[in-house]
Amino acid sequence: MLTGKNITVGVTGGIAVYKAVQLVSDLKKYGAGVQVIMTRSAREFVRPLTFQVISGNRVCTDLFESFPEGKVQHIDLAGGTDLLVVVPATANIIGKAACGIADDLLSTVILAMNCPVIFCPAMNVNMYYNRVVQRNIETLRVVGYHFVEPGMGRLACGAEGRGRLADLGVIIEQLAALLNSGLDMQDMTVMVTAGPTVEPFDPVRYLTNRGTGKMGYAVAGAAARRGAEVILVSGPTALKPPPGVKLITVETARQMYDAVMEHFPGVDVVVKTAAVADYRPAQAAVEKIKKHGDRWSVEFIKNPDILAELGNKKKGQFLVGFAAETGELDTHALNKVRKKNLDFLVANDITMPGAGFGTDTNIVKLVYPDGKILPLPEMRKSVLADRLLDEVLSLKNMS
Image (cartoon, rainbow, N blue to C red; front, side, top):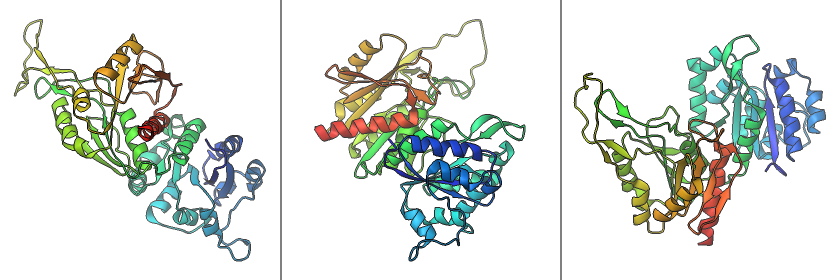
């Protein structure tokens, strides 16, 4: 997926610089052309010659160094790349970018870029969670910059926590997803449902499930990057909404039903990843139910089946459903895709390692009304999101 792509790697001064060397090597292995820009602090850790040998290109270091006659270095560097990745991204370069500061070659190139820019933070855990750093990250996210969240573990300073540079495989997956997304959905409106629903017993207790929203948020973010207008109807999650989406927050299945039905007539595609409760307590108490006796019986009534209702009402909309199963996956999935009038269904066995709720990866099968079943290998949800949207576009173009 990187063959023929031109990637600029901005290297700043952190101990994770040595991993940037391996990243450049991996990008070359996958067929990308790589141009490296190093800050002065980065050169305190690794010499430019190392990156020059690995990348096969001259390393750029100085805003005012000589450049071919008639060319402006930072403009030429910005115009000749498909993507800029800053790795490691220190608190300093994140702060500069958030404030629009351009006082060296890398910070100037960032401002001149007209292509995706992705930051890969790596720093001490206290620095990463510092309110100023988090504000700067959020500022950049809002205006369209991308981030690969650092990992957890032991840091070079000896502290434990979040701050390690993300695994290189994760970084490369996100680079590939950005580079291959394009704007092929810019004339579409996409509605995504995500997360769990909560069904209250009383003001304190509720019924819910293990859904975290990761898959739905990944789909919403991918659709937005591809140019779609995105409506994200989300149950309670701990996730930040992707940049550029319209977020509608709900709690109960009935609230999600109302939000989805309100917007359904105006959308082109629905991807329904939400884990909606099938039943709710028949009566939710106004006050907290006090403990009494050894047993507590609750009557449940059925919630509206949002996906089935969409299947009955659709008039040209493309409808994708999800099914989490624990057995007889193919049988249940085929029944659901036909019964609910879906264009295709994404089914997974949540008992499989790497495919359950809350994971960053998934292992799914694409199930079609004609009985075709396409198994996909394990992949990160961010990558799977684009794969699903590719399938949506392919099938829509055939219809």
